[in-house]
Length: 292
Image (cartoon, rainbow, N blue to C red; front, side, top):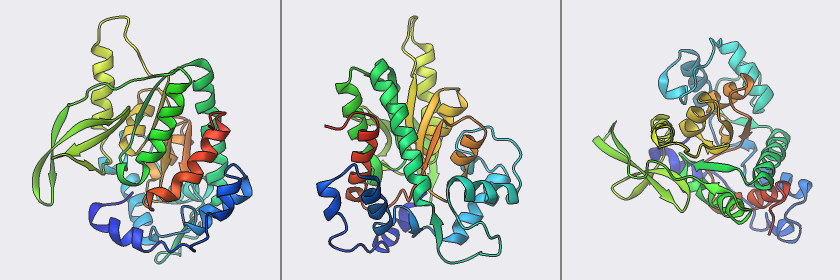
């Protein structure tokens, strides 16, 4: 989870050797090479997401701060339970005495979750399911979603685009702003003044699902949602099969997985350079049986 005022600093902190992806250009679907790439680009392993931010967000989720629930009606979690769950599902340091500095994401947990997500996307493709895609991280992750969308459309899936243009006001550091649902092809995101926005809000997904409910019968309903942040949380809370991505400071989607409301949560740093996700995307599509 990245805020606008920390994004540049976060991206700049990711130093990668110039030859980091050489092997992946030859064998993009090799698990060992993907593992090396994820560690080199710090998508997983020793990530740039700070420990103190992680712990602060866990406490806010425990306190049921709506901004850290992502639209999920979660059970009562204690801080110790949350840290233990995040160590198990995301791979953060399990020691509560580690309060500052770097934190980690378990690279093997990332790959295992990519395998699970790929299997679910592959099922959607084979069954020509109806899908919905959305991201609260359009800068770094839009390319991942667009590639998945293209592959699912090519397989015959219907991609829903409800509530385009729906808008609502938000209060920011610069005053009140209007945010609007827009689509990049079939991937939903929020826009303010023509600029795509980072968001945790579940409201847009809730509006999208409400529009689908309000359509005359028979109306399409998503069999699968592929999303992150509040887009994923709201879909999972609505009982839709949901798979998504989450950073080590986004505990709600991991808690949702632990509670059975989110089918797959892939742990990763969600704020590195967009091109760093390309080998991961190739791997995901290969696991789905959709590699070109």
